[in-house]
Image (tube, rainbow over all chains, first blue to last red; front, side, top):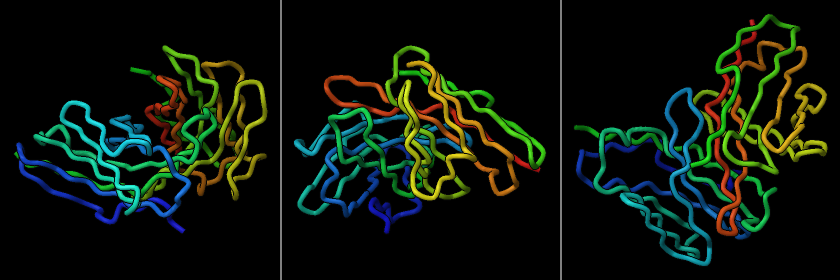
Length: 115
Length: 117
């Protein structure tokens, strides 16, 4: 049973446009969500996170939106740059207050930004 | 930002041998470290949660006698794959948890590519 789903395995956008990556979850206990970016043969790089008490968090070109009622979150990248091309993983945890929290990852979405 | 290193980045070994992978948090102390493995075109699968000075907690289906985890200090955790077999070939990634502003964020190492011949 996949608790975190990224239904789009790939996404292609033009440089300068907006990239929207989507993520759905089924576990209502999840209260902390993160996005990671990963290049091949490297570890994931933390991008941005959001707690369930918020519905939006912004950091530079990256904005994450959370819709708790729909159990849906999205990552917006604007403007998209060729260097953003990578696999993006959505992750969720059920205990944001403790250091022992476990992350559940989606399968990732490959973003390609074309020059 | 928080930096996590892994060593080695790549290792090739013969079937039946043991391989040790180190994970270090370089600029912060991490009470908790995590070990993941990733198969090609798959997501990251949590193998175990490691706390400094205590036994690791393994996920269901992960053999604790095969994947030995030692967390000797707040900056170092090791994963030893014992009696490695070709099916253990995978990309192993560690992460370390760093608390900032009341929440914990996992920062990942660069990963270790293990190939068992």
